[in-house]
Length: 175
Image 1 (tube, rainbow, N blue to C red):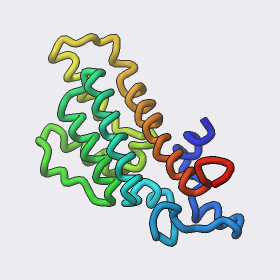
Image 2: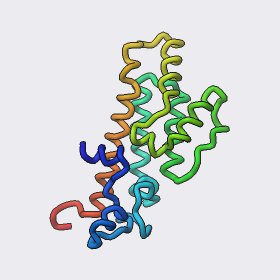
Image 3: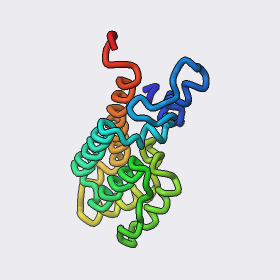
Image 4: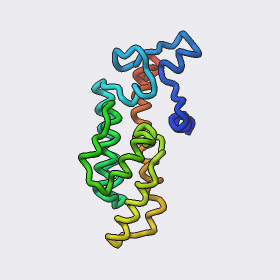
């Protein structure tokens, strides 16, 4: 739980942050040659191992969203938004239908890095509710839809954090 709290509040103990208060810790990324490991770099590091884990995050999110009967376009937007953030690029809203432009603008304003923290536009729920009503799906699951997806994102994200920590501190006592 403390790690998630640090993620949500933007105080992950990444290289530059820890180096600031204790110089014996290196500020660089433990996985690549980047001299400053910031929170954004942690999420955007292009090392192949990190890219593989981020692919698993996207795959796991898709799987959970499918299980929750998520509107297909919402899944596409989630995955494209996170993928663009992970790659350090900007999501092109013109690739999506007009009905989703408010969602895309609001989430862009909030930031896709905040999507990882559970800070989602209210449009996600509005569009999902609309989908549930139009398709006569079980409305009882609506209250837990976004919560379950956020928890899944955090669970998948934790694998990325664990991998980073193994690269920084070693895999066992010997390393």
